Amino acid sequence: MRINKTLKIIGGLIVFFTLPTLLFFGFLYLKYNEDLPQGILGAPADALANKMLDALDHENYEATNYLEWTFKGRHHFQWEKDKNICEVQWEDFKVQVHLNDTIKSKAFVHGFEVRGSQRAELLKKAIDYFNNDSFWLVAPYKMFDPGVVRQVIKQENGQEALLVSYTSGGSTPGDSYLWLLDATGKPEGFKMWTSIIPIDGFPASWNEWITTESGAQLPSNHQLLFFSLDMGEVKGTR
Image 1 (tube, rainbow, N blue to C red):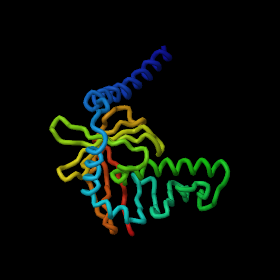
Image 2 (image 1 turned 120 degrees about the vertical axis):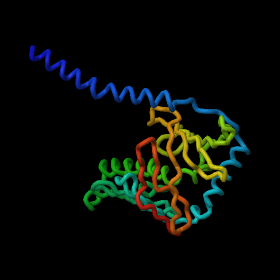
Image 3 (image 1 turned 45 degrees about the vertical axis):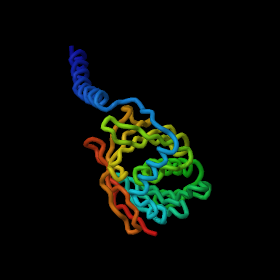
Image 4 (image 1 turned 90 degrees about the vertical axis):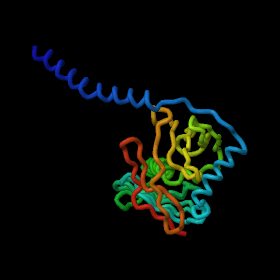
């Protein structure tokens, strides 16, 4: 009898904790999930991408040689953009990542340099952090990266949006983002079709902009429903 009672309690706890989660996920899926749209390739898409870059005064970003930010209070980055070297810090680890020549990279634990398999493991993690967390900082400036496919999407309200698909590069090639723009072309948010989010078309904001010392316009925070992706104190210098 005690065993049966214990099993009933365990079963009740499982239902109590999992059922609301499943219901909430089902609600989000029905509300947001949508197929990846298909639009117009070529010159119209390039023109819309350039309008987006012009709205952000992208020349100031291109002239920015140093960027610093902290993603969600966990991963700190000091990126020498002109040299493409980034120091990534989290917990007790620090990795100096030479993005153009990773063999030159160094990894540290508690300030002591490590080598071998531990270095390789930390280097991979640092690069994955950089690829993901820098995207949330500079994604609007990656419209014309190698392997990027651009499309103009006509929305139901008659406005144009820019669909950007990454066919190569980064840690998760194959992801797509539909940029939602204001009348000037400045990003207000995007919808995501990614391998790590199970709901296709999930939205995120891009409307909390700051202007750095170098003049680059960069986001300070993103909202995904009631979740926040804080970028910390964002710095940019020439």
